[in-house]
Length: 78
Image 1: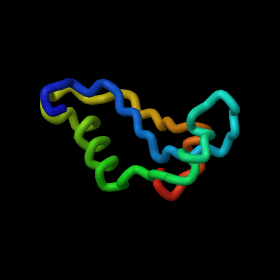
Image 2 (image 1 turned 90 degrees about the vertical axis):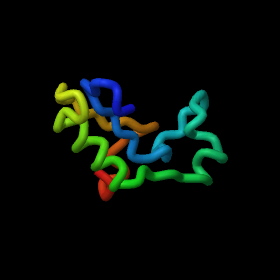
Image 3 (image 1 turned 60 degrees about the vertical axis):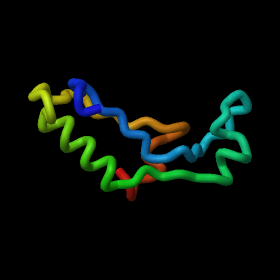
């Protein structure tokens, strides 16, 4: 999305969840058996570009971490 100003960045470090809410798809056995973690280099490049204002010069001011359950369960990625 090089053509857009990125005013905020949301990083989802993993699809794994440490909660077991019965109504949530992240608690399904399929989701839990196929864990996916974000590629750290991809995330770093996206964050760096957004904070530097690439390509339009408008710098992102918000960085959020988001995932099902607790996003800091993947502290090695964060």
